[in-house]
Image 1 (cartoon, one colour):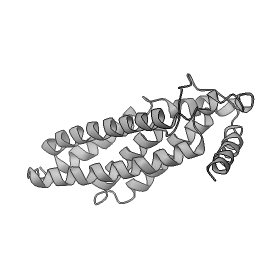
Image 2: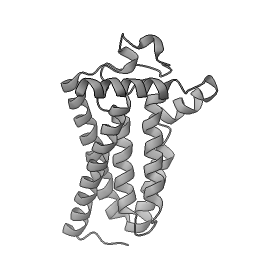
Image 3: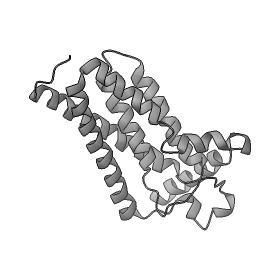
Length: 191
C-alpha cells in the first residue's frame, strides 16, 4: 500500500514538475525564495497592529516566532526520521526531474515551506477574520502557491507538500488558540 502510494506520488510529481518551462522559471524561483514575501508579512503585522494595538502586536510577534520555530523544528525531525530523499536526489528519477532550485537539500518529507506558509496563513487569517472575512481565503491560496512552487523547482513531492500544509494548518490553528488565550489572560485589549 505504501509503495503504491509513493509510486503514485512520484508519477504525480514528475507530471507536475515537467509542466514547467523556462519562460516561467524566474517567477517560480521568486515565489519559492524565502524573502520574497517579507512585504506580505509586514502588511499582516501592520493589520494586526491596527486592529489590536501595540501590546497585542508584541504578543503576536512572540507567538509567531514560537510558531515558526515549532513548525521548522518538527519539519526537521520528520525529515531526519523518514529520510525520504528529495526528488532532485532520487537516483531513479533524476534524469526526468526539471531541477531549477538554487540547491537541493538531503531529505524532503515534509515540506518546511508548505508548513510555515500554511501556519502563517491560518494564524493571520483567523486572527483577522472578524475584520477581513475573505483574507483567510487569499492567504490559503497564497500558501498553496508557495507549496506548489516546491514541486515546480524540483525539491518536493506532492505528499511532502500535502503533509506540510496539513501540519502547518494544525500548527497555525494551535498557535491562534494560544494567542487568543494569551490576549485574554493578560487582558490585552484593543487600543
